[in-house]
Image (cartoon, rainbow, N blue to C red; front, side, top):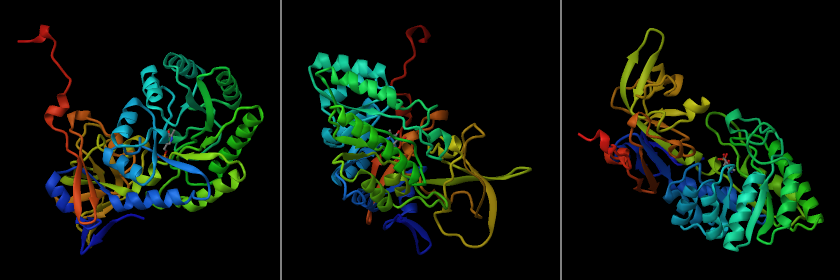
Length: 419
Ligand code: PLP
């Protein structure tokens, strides 16, 4: 469900034609729909109304300040994985007590900032990390709320790059090690074990793996409580999938109900870390056709967006629906839709059946709101795209396209090379 629809043959975001935005900002440009973001947050959050919970939007999916502000206004918190994301969450006005900090490689500085900020909890991912937290907490004489990220060894049946809950993955710790970490926390006045957490992967299309993970987390939480460790929270991570092509992910309502059933009677507050499901279908990447090219074996549509703007097809061979901004019935042809970057991996689609378009026409890559701009880079010295938020009939530039000055900011030529 999203608000990108053709109106009189023109693709619009809510009530604004994409062509109007592209004309004002240039291309490539990310366009997000406020109404879609709002709807997705509310549908997801309402699905858990039977369970005490906090929806901590996983901002790695799309960390634009305006998007974070929307999530915060709707009552959400944030799941962060770096000092940079902490900074963004605070700048966007997210209350510290709704921020959870995950990630296998938090630095001492990042841990210190999180402790000073007074966030909801840090999800500990190793014994070495706990030692650093202990040191920081002792120095700051601050009691730090913690949870251990357990690796429940569950196959989320998704792409190997976004599976995180298997024995071979770098994330979390196995239950025996988690148990040891909880016991170590119990011995330190500054370490406060408040929760248990896991995140088994992303773009998960079945409820079974979630239920299995929650069931195993619940038995661990109950054991810890029986041993005198009074956990209050269970962080079940993110991972709910979305439709990119014809996938049928579980409805948030069914997900919420399944978790509610598993946790009935435990009085644990559930922390949720959804990313993709909130923002994925709330955004598109609009790009312009530069050239058509017929090779000996294939035809190409060369557009002005590239893998540096939207990496998912190159990284995961991910599918995105691609449509012309001006509806074009009639002749269709098969083409690879590629960008200008000097890599054969720089493609948005292979052998895709598309309308017969002329150079200069606009194309929309759908489902680009999650892991789109946030994964973008400056490869080939390309300036990162502009981002626009649409609300009803208005649009707002929420990130300007980078300038050439931005591209070289912070670089310098050492004195021995000066002319
Ligand atoms: N939480 C953690 C710890 C993650 O690593 C991720 C994604 O990788 C998420 C939440 C968000 O996942 P998704 O966007 O699939 O909901």
